[in-house]
Image 1 (cartoon, rainbow, N blue to C red):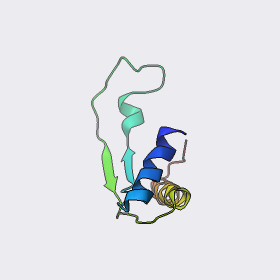
Image 2 (cartoon, rainbow, N blue to C red; image 1 turned 45 degrees about the vertical axis):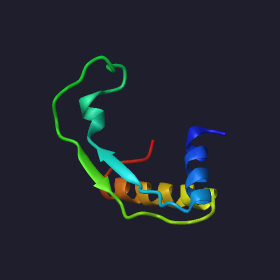
Image 3 (cartoon, rainbow, N blue to C red; image 1 turned 30 degrees about the horizontal axis):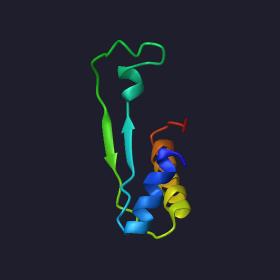
Image 4 (cartoon, one colour; image 1 turned 135 degrees about the vertical axis):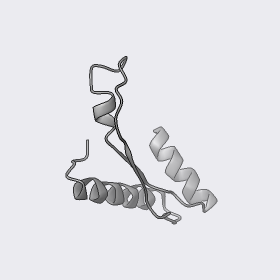
Length: 79
């Protein structure tokens, strides 16, 4: 079981919300291949409304959907 799956499984079993978060602009601060270099810049943090549910797969899918939609609205794709 992956850590991602484990997190959604625990949230579903314990009836706690999942809060999707987007970080936009981090790629400019630490580009691929330059992980030892940290540049200055701006990062936009978007904290989405909590998602509640009792099914781990559905929590994961809905979180992914919310994040994907937000990134798309900012002209970014999902990696």
